[in-house]
Length: 582
Image (cartoon, rainbow, N blue to C red):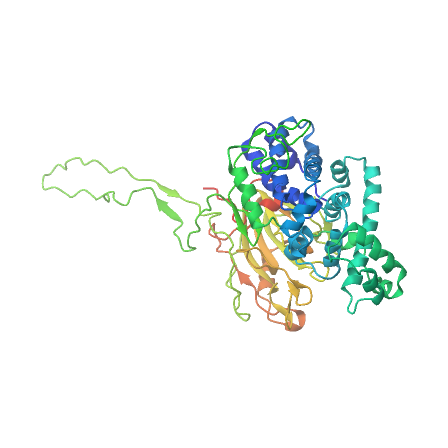
């Protein structure tokens, strides 16, 4: 479950006190959550971006009045759902007509279609997403929150806050919606059967093909009573198991651009371009919470819209110098005359000569300037370069994690797990991609709160995760389930990645759609070298030698997604964060 960290509480407090950077962090780290709540509750209606815009405007202007910073997410969810209900009331008379005009009957245009496409859903997960189309508006509001609860994005308390109910009454509402969702799944399965049950064809006569609560009741009645249809339901997996850990739907590029432009604007009306501008609510209407009101929005960090998702990056990425760049730089300008030794004179008494002032040299540390980047796998039979030996002491490991069944190493198996490593020495991170269990959106693991220095010194384990383990099958997936696709620019992981730490850092599992296990264990220099230099043995899964990355000095690379900061949401660490000490 999503952990409420001290850092998040501090971020909310700072935002309430007017810290623009903290407000920026809250906007960036919660925009996608708000979009998913509103998107599913509104079934992907074109007004979703307006509702998200108005929600974030109210969050920015209201955070200073929040009494308990620990309740921020509950408060955020409640605001989002209030905006959704306000939109529903404001558009009650025109929604049906607008849906017809805008083609909302097109399955690819609603949020279910977006979920299937952007999360790459198939099989029963796809059927579950499509089943949401058969629910009415009130049920979709509950489904939007419950979906995120079982996906480990919300707590039950936050769900209840969004429904404006006690947790006990919220549980009753959720149970009813789950029953209707299962009924809808049965209808979706029966309608997709080839050939379709003749009795179902008869019952569906006159249906225009658009899912609705009325037709769900009619068709599900037949499915329950028909042996042919019920036989097709024997393998249905409970929806909460299917949705567990499923990631958030990425914000579509067109929507994201508009929302980010809003956030970059110094001062805008809360409803600029929203429902009032579209004539759906009268400006200043009595009793309406959607009245126009100026708000202050601080500029968010530049965002890169890549593949339809919002990817946060540094405003000014630091240029990456060549590895061969000199380590020592002098402060003497290139145009300055070079000091020369005084020439002897013919007179017996030398003329005093002023000694040129010596220019001090300044060591410029390249630490943190060379960051891991996407690279090509070396030839499988290429032996690793010598591994420099660094001074090592002991490493202490703590945090929120479990333990591996194989060797008892600390292991992170759920989103929100983290491991804090302190000391001086080598450590191994072993990657496990459980693609047979769950596959989808990949969120990289991140390193936060660095004190001191962290280097990426070697890669091993006998294979890169994109090496074949069988024809067409890698450790990143298989054709029948799909393959994990890393974010653009991310370096491909090896089975074992080795690092050297002198200080302290916290490592986070941010898994979303893809099921990931991460084991972390201290290692000696000999163990690292033994791993990467082990001879090829395909029978044991050792299909390539390892790779030495360490240069033995500060020019050694640092891992991607590393920062000295402690963000409220560790999943938001940029791919190329700044960790330089110079």
